[in-house]
Length: 169
Image 1: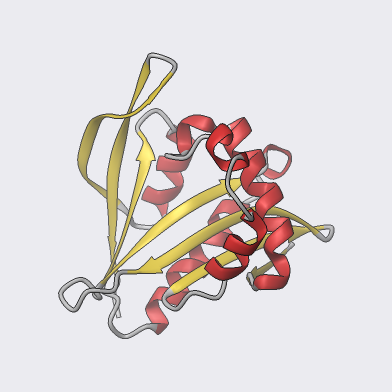
Image 2 (image 1 turned 180 degrees about the vertical axis):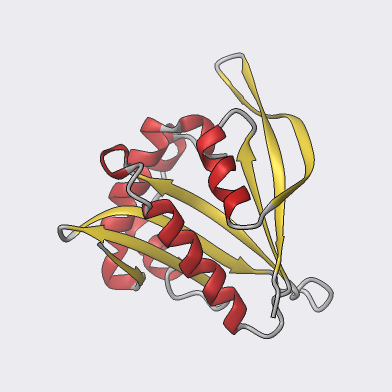
């Protein structure tokens, strides 16, 4: 397995994995598959996102196929630059349980540690996703709040745990 920071050349791989994520784990994302496929020029948007300053997307390649991803985004405002957020964390079912998610998160955390301004990483996870919550806890994230009814899908509500990791230097 290879973990690397994704570049615009990886946009098609990213987009294909993103669509898989939205189909197989719809409760884990604020965007629906239906919304995603209706976007205009999605590959161009991904290419742009993969070049955006303070936005770091890491991918896990297994046998030359992108099987996992995570994005670290540093906040921009003067009073917020000490914070970063984890978004779009996903690992394909065929490689779950092989420490792919852990490797991706460690890479994102290590990147945050190289950016002097970042002191804290936030993320949100569906409260019922025990595997993800266990991974985040193992890496030092702690719950600081729960948002009830954070997402609604087909008349079913999903709560989200908000978690944070304080960067130790």
